[in-house]
Length: 316
Image (tube, rainbow, N blue to C red; front, side):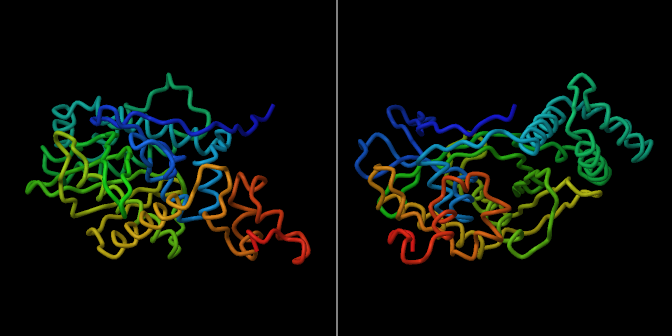
């Protein structure tokens, strides 16, 4: 039996390291001063994709049921986190003298048969660990392991007069011999290479760069990240990309953050999301229909089917 969508009012979470302060995705200016706006990489990305979808998912709390892609991605992320926790670096170094094949063989022993993977997780793990075995062959010994592995970070910043709690889990943060940080993201989807995909990934990485700079983590807080990169394991071969941090996407991410704050400043908490703009009518066929799992709740999805003289003014 298919799992139904649920609507759960956004709760207020304690802000780590800030006693008495809470944050919520449903923030509006009428709330008490000890409750502030909560933003994650995913919520900000959703707002950039479609502000109305963001409103439905976050301030309203419409939750789509977990699907195979979500479950697979979570399982792969958990397995890679455990790989870096469990690897015996000394043994791996001893295997390096026997060549890449022996290193890869050792790395692949970290794929647990006890997990009972049923969604193709092993294929993703094999591709990722193969890429890591190749990196290990040329990496400096002490800099192969990440300095941050699925690490939760939080920061409180002020955006246009509004306190914002930025939160996120960084997949991996590496550093080279000079201590220069490199943040890296893992995706189990297919890399399309389209311009919008490049922009989306770079803005995701920009969010992490800003979060790391502004957080108060005892090791990672305040670091100036100079490199970012990502892996996509969904195709026949892994797509791995690394590049220097780009100012353009950092600026674009900051603008998106300010735009989101601006929408919330107009929201009253009355469940009317007119200040969170709808996509154009033309998007229904090419974006809403194939890509939005909660379109049945969206005014645009139904309004576009009505004669223009009957459509709600707020959404025309």
